[in-house]
Structures are given as structure tokens and as C-alpha cells.
Length: 73
Image (cartoon, rainbow, N blue to C red; front, top):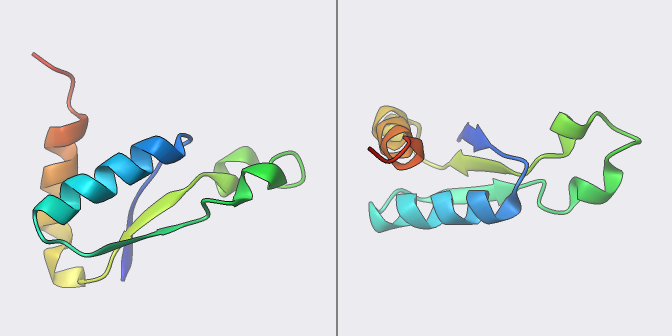
């Protein structure tokens, strides 16, 4: 299992999880409930994370996220 992305916005993490799910890449989210810890912990440490289950699909998942996160042309 590998962390593939983190973001300040939990909605973005949910969206990216759905995008990878459409490509049948299994994911899990972590740290969705740590926002209340900001201040006690560094803010970046509290950001929600997206992890993929199958390490073999890491390159494919990264390519999908890169395309998804690219600015619209």
C-alpha cells in the first residue's frame, strides 16, 4: 500500500478516490478526521491522504491523477 496524494480539502481526496475507483484502482483514505488536530500538529500532517492498495498500479494511478489534476486547457 502506498500513499499517492494528500490535500488540504477532504472533498478533493474523495473526488480523486472516485476517479481512481472508475479505473478499478482500490484506494483507502486516511487522516480524514485529523483537521481538529491542526494547531497541536503541523497543518500538513493533518491533511487527508489517499493511498492505493496495489503497489503494482502506482504508475498508472499517478498518471491518472496527473491528468485529473492538470489545469483545463
